[in-house]
Amino acid sequence: MLPAGSSLSDWLTWLETLSPNEIELGLDRVRTVLDRLSIRQPRHTLLVAGTNGKGSSVAMLSSLLRATGHTIGAYTSPHISRYNERIAVNGVPVCDEDIVTAFEAIEAVRSGVPLTYFEYGTLAAMWVFENASLDVWVLEVGMGGRLDATNVIEPTASLITNVSLDHCGWLGDDIESIAYEKAGVMRHDVPTVFAASDVPDAIIDHAKDCGARLLLAGRDFAHQRESGAGWSWSGGGRRFESLREPGLHGDFQLQNAAGVLALLIAAGLGDAMTRDILNAELPDLTLTGRLQTVAAGGASWLLDVAHNPAAADALAATLDGDGKAWCIVGLLDDKDVEGIAAPLDECVDHWIAVAPASRRALAAEECGRRIANSANRPCMIHESLRDAMDHARHHAAPGDRILVTGSFYLVGPALQILELYSRPES
Image (cartoon, rainbow, N blue to C red; front, side):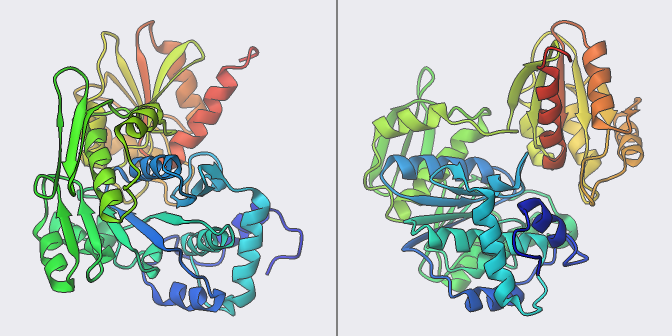
């Protein structure tokens, strides 16, 4: 255990040394420590699983729950800029001291049980939330569902946003295998919402096997665009019309919002929901690193954490404009480089590969080689993100857009560099 008075930075550095693997799926170790902490869940605990859209869904849930009078703890991962973003109480990241106190409590009872960085953080979030005496916990599943550390709790309702190919090295290399892992968040007689229209057989089969109450888009709830810019939602005996679109960019956010509404109503948390609340909360919602636009350093930037083919498809659908597009991309070593590059290649004029700030980063040279082979044209390579961003902004013409994408571990540092660009001396 670290000495008393150690900083959050010291703790995070130490946690990285605890396990040789950043990811190690399994619940026994986490459950053992959770039992020793004697953490009690609140009346409502919501699990959010899926390939894409989890962070957006958690942000919507947090906003709507707070607007209807609930106190809420939200756990997400990874973070963009600061670790504290992962653990938020009533929409505000908790302070360093609260996280350190949680880490100290975990270490006091761990007694040699091996935990990964992610598992330690998951337990810390639960400890913080219980000590804040909150009404609702919303936990974002880190990977898969069945063996993810968040699944050690008993959800009172769950949301699976969608299923597509990602983390294939851990979850399986086809949709049905991955869907089976994500279906592990289901429980007997507990509602689980599946938000996407394409439902894998494994989702339906597992719900039948475990007796979960599965709610499907298009069958148990539905949304549709109205004439003009509005949309409507119906399900669970409720209907909302003339809704304003979510402030989070992308057509797919309507699907996320529809799943969130279905989850709240199925969980018994939507009784106070009104059209006015939806129209006051969702349109003003923003989320760092999700189709985020920034003007800095004399250039127009678009930052998005698209790190799998489905997310790249959604990102490509938003790219438009008359100018050229520069794409600075950095990926982790388990990602489908070709699957991510293919949908973006039609929109990108200049590729630049870098390595994200992670132990699991794919080397810039390898990333660039695979993109060049996939696109059948050159991909520039830069040793540092700052060099890549400097090159792009100095060579981009007025009207061009510079995209930074591929990993949370790239977008976070890019935002810090953009802050430097905004200073007069830059």
